[in-house]
Length: 86
Image (cartoon, rainbow, N blue to C red; front, side):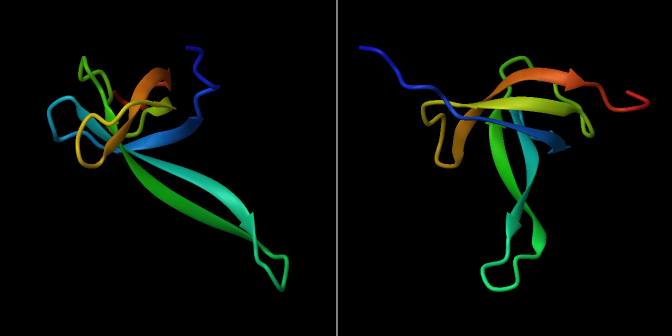
C-alpha cells in the first residue's frame, strides 16, 4: 500500500531535556480574516529524536509519523544548521 506524501515542517529546537524527545517551535504567517494583516503564529511540536542529536537553537526539519506516544506525532528528519556556540 502506497503512503501519501508526508507533511514536513521546519523549525527551531526550544527544548531537549527529555530522553529521545525534542520540542520544536514552528513559525508560520497567516492572514487576518478581516484586516488581511500578516500575523506570525507559532506552534510547538514534540518530536521523536532517536539519537538525541538535537541541541537547543538548532534549525531542524521534522516529518509526520505514526504516534510514538500520547503527544508525539512527528520525528526528526534532519538537522539543517547547528546553533551558534554548540
